[in-house]
Image (cartoon, rainbow, N blue to C red; front, side, top):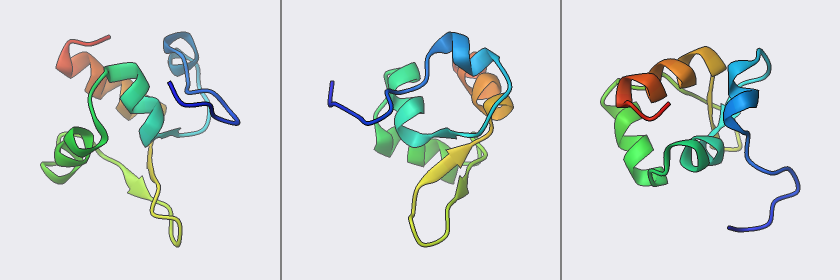
Length: 74
C-alpha cells in the first residue's frame, strides 16, 4: 500500500459523521479499482462530486455507506 500523509479512512470511521470521503478511501474500503468506481459514478450508481480545479472525487459518508451496502461489501 502506498504511503499517504493521511491514511485511508477505516470502516469504523465511515460509520461516523464527518467530511466526505475521497476516491482512494473508496478504493481501500471496497477493494475495487479507481476506473471501476468511476464507471459506477458514470452509471449513476454512486453519487459523487468533483472538487473544482483539483479533479478529485468526493462522496458523502452516507452515500458511501449506501453504495458499499448495495454492493454487499459492508
